[in-house]
Length: 324
Length: 268
Image 1 (tube, rainbow over the protein chains, first blue to last red):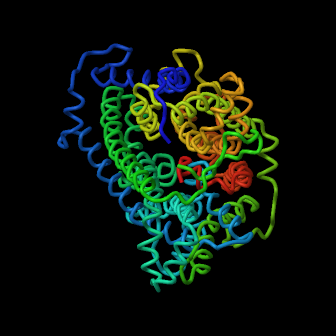
Image 2: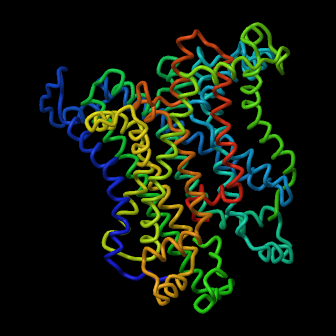
Image 3: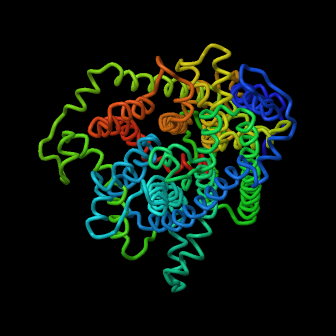
């Protein structure tokens, strides 16, 4: 569908622009302002130039050491949960029942963890994992595994990762399921005639069709895990020691805990910049994938009948479902 | 759709994995504190409603739910109403800087809340909105408005362009076309977008907690505070947790057929 050029469309976008600018640009300018200054309290500020940024990127200073350590932990955490959630999500999506009331039931149960406030997710796992009153902790200790997420670093990590898998795998599964649903039955019939194996069907039909949603899933999961705060904060409080202190937790500690505005602001900017770069890479890949798909679609004969819209009475028309 | 061997087993195991921690929370909310601490029971042996009763009678508890609902609903209304025209513009027209604007919106959906916590605190204190539902509602716009624009853009693009053209030929003015024809056509999309705004505003805690102190405190923040002060009242904590799950569980039912599409930002 070719879009027409119309500069007046800016008027339609203006409200969104104003609202988001008010809550994004204004605060960001304060952050930039703080990041260049130092304070000794009493609202007296001194020009500090790029001092905070130098410190931030130098691992030998206190600030730099904390930042880089938490960044490393955060990246490791994101990679681990992606490595678990994406394959598991695909498997769950492939295991969805085909029809009947079980589909709705499965969808609702899958979506349930996504709608629980993040601190309650933390609370649930905090309770569930406790060796004294939690089912998980109690059972593990009863069968002879010494498990205590408050004292043991490894246990804390396992708890945080399992919690994230519990919380977010459904998202990947739901996205993949939506992708799978859009595959026409004819593809499978053709595969059956060709005698394709189960694996070949997955590789040649299902995976390519899920490409786009998987990209969105990876983007969302990477971003959200990269800025995770509430859940690990409730469960472990960033501990034991600093072992589960991720970038957001570190940032909040510096900003709202110590009120070190300059340091916190510099950290914020670098943090935001990383997110922006990753976001841009994903966005480029995603739009390119979209263009390729369109080219492909236009070279193939159209399968869907075009709605003959122009002359029918209005109410009879329904929006075409599932058009990207 | 073709599934894999052993799918019932896999699905069953996964659902059990999802439900077990939630069951444990529900289970605890019906136990007395002495039962929780002293014995390990798989279901409440002396079931009690005392924790729920306490929440529904103590104003400092139930006001938290009202506060939360207030800013969540405000936020949903603001997000949807500003996002609707923008979604139409992005879907139908090309204009100067449209792609950059879209990317800028995307990047705001991804911005870490922790970065904005402190500047928001300053901003809303300065304009006198601190500790009101408006502060939280506006703050949550930063991730909900972009999300609503995306989802709605997907749904608007699903409406054939011929409908617009026919309507304009029939003499509809733009606002009238928008309200009378477009909005009813994408009603399900608006529902889905509203659901997602509701959900993301409902689950967020960091900003909500930072921007409120007394009179607009969300339930999530009340939970964290009261628990540490009361020396771990586990049953009460569990009951409060269960009550925060219920609104989400209720709204899922209405959008169950659109959940996946919404999560894909309307682009499946």
